[in-house]
Length: 417
Length: 147
Image (cartoon, rainbow over all chains, first blue to last red; front, side, top):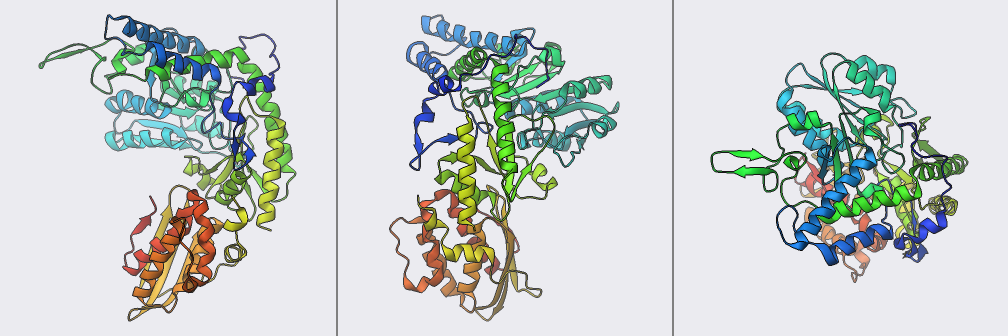
């Protein structure tokens, strides 16, 4: 994924058998068959170092953060703020003041929509998204449109599932105030040329939010090299816990934004007449945060960097190419999303078998895939299909997993013969 | 988990060749059903005479379980009065959700749906058409949802 200059020398080869031993869940069976987990794009599994970091914190260090002088509160605060610094390094932000912990990508987008866009936008202003977006990068902007009277525009996609770049560029104008785009499209795996899109948007004076939920598990992300204004992602797609995610925002923008939620921890002083807000990043973290989630996320970042994101990406690209060839050979299978640049996501339909039935039959064979609209109903509408089956590959998947997928698909074909 | 229990021949046949598929132009009632989880959609049209379902048709796009269940339902309720349909609805609901429910002989081909209860994620697929029929019977044009 050509998003940043490489920070690591030649990609080391991933020792997948060793990696698999780090994920205890892969030892279990499902319906009497060994689990074949091909749903990492929905949620990746957690390796032992993440599970142990969370356990260690919960067992020995838990207390509330930023609140006490006692030893545990200080230990918890250090671990939580240490996790923030870990995130800063992971995406190469300038400062921890730019790292806001949120529940996940969805909350990050909503925060920007309500705190950045809503107070500023009005009739005549435009928000530009693409036809590939997840509902989480559509609905918050529709809410802002309805609240402010601004206009929401959508850059169309082509039959390969790529954003038509020329069309996207033609939709930019001085009216464009904000551009919100996926880094990697969740339903189809398309990698968007975000650097070019960001530069073009900036040339028109728009700020850019990048939904990186599907990108961070597959590539090094450098928010300064990208030049984006906001970048959001979730922990659980990066082999970390659920309920924790990150909003990166350029400090200058975050500093000018009003808090989104009010409560404890986001204030400096409160009286019944007047409240002064806390500094960044805490201004945006009202209430007790997900402390163990942040610690687990930091451990997940240590883990993927120990494997090497480039090694992971190279491994996944080999698997994607292999699986694509295998599925293309099967009669009646249509791959939906054939972009030139894709992350390790394979969305497909089988002639005469509804994706929901495919999901059940694959599950009976121990193969976990996502079926449905993938929270991207406009993408399904574009291809005139109700749903797809989606296999997605992570660092622990192997060619044997692809063989199991193919065998299970043949089984589905037999059942519906 | 035995797939043969779920995808019995009757189910596969009704999926491939759904009976009473289409719409009724001068319907007395119709309703749209939607399962947002998997995107299944169907519409049920009814023509009633007094208290009886004189004709019933459905249209939709869904998985094999939802299509076959709707097809089987239309065969089962055609010509029946509302009270009989209500009673059938209750027995189908038990069949789909209760582990120990035994299909009684009066269910006829609908008994083929008994395998669905082993697959909890699929119960809504089989029950969507029945919820939709209920709504159509109330002559409500409102969309019903399984959620």
